[in-house]
Length: 613
Image (tube, rainbow, N blue to C red):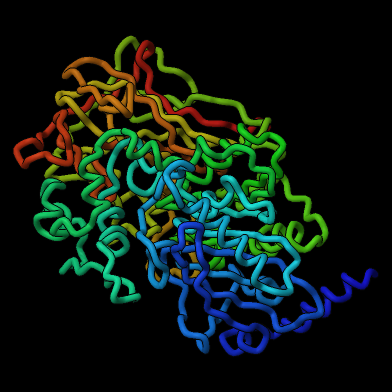
């Protein structure tokens, strides 16, 4: 065995007891530093260096707007890496308050666009930080890795653009990529009211430079978010009642209701060129904030950098759950194994060890995805897998759902959508959107008259899907605008056993597991830049992506599709009249009747990528 390998084994043993704050203190030295950027602004940075000097170490960098506590030279984190194994393995861990946040200087701009001509941004700050670390921190091996979840994931992606030559491995995790099409603030042009209100109220107020403390969470005055936002009325009331124009980013949102340059300039996808270092892109099937982001980033890197060493890893997780939960269940749905632990030990750490430390090649596949339903990990040499074929699952008469196309010359179902009585997005009583609604039992809305329900026969064999899910609706309406929400659901058998333990007392027989759901604002059906009103009574095609999934509907289960036009308050209310929703008045909101066609010449369906057997 080579001497270097022996030293590495010794290091693991030395750091093996590195648990908790005291363990970190024993094995790491902490420094707090102000790191200068090219424009003279200094960013507050904390560096933890292994005390053991028998080997050199790579840097592992995390840049965040969410603070990097504990602050103070004698206060240590209980854990340094994304999982305890990283601490035991040994890295030079670097944490940084991004520009304009907490103890860093400068001004913070939410989702600051990348533009080399406009001065410093997250890309240049990342580059300058790495350059400083290489020149001013001892005992490193000249290699840098970076990772981050959610907004820090976005900063990881920005660091991949015009990357420093020493950056050899990046893992953007749940990173947004396009805030109008599919991530935090909008989905297909529909505003994500509940999440934007909560996040911006705490993270985007005008900065008080006399304090480094986080802003207190907004006090809703009630645990009932549905009631709070319904009583809010039109969205323009937010500033008048609560924000007092003190949240600049909210003000900007209200001025940019279409896919204009304000939103386009923030999109990272066009800049993902010449990425020649290894990338581990991570997402969760049930991520309520950023699932479009990691999938679109993966697809874009593949298209623009076909020779890149890129890996896609997706599991049955909520937002960031792969680093902080066991992953053996989510809500009432069981996955049969600790999927997060598998990711941490078999994918995450091996990826960084290989590229930063010359450890053995873990031979990760192109796509490492967890297939829900069957509850197994799947490896593919491309995504979607080559074995998948597109099949249309048609809405049929009498609430049916089948792969056979309708033969009737006419056929349609209608429902009345009232903005004053919107369909709730969850059965929970809460003021923030949370996470479990992404996999929640949909029986709580299935009987509402403003929710259409279509269900297949009992499956006589397993049905496995892998890849994008496309909704195609032929609609008409009495209004001039509308939202359409399509949900794909796995219906369990009537005799499905209850979970054990079962503290919530949920009965799993005929449980309606939400597998995928998405919203589309109809005025954007032809262009997100130039919305157009619907013509009352005219048939219109609405087509949109429900995003990727890997799932097996098991034999004995049924497939269900639900269609509705409100999803409140996770999505703001559409007045159902063609107006600027951000300036809409109370009398702009109107009741409308929406019709979904399902005939031979006007079929509505969900297109699945079915894995051939």
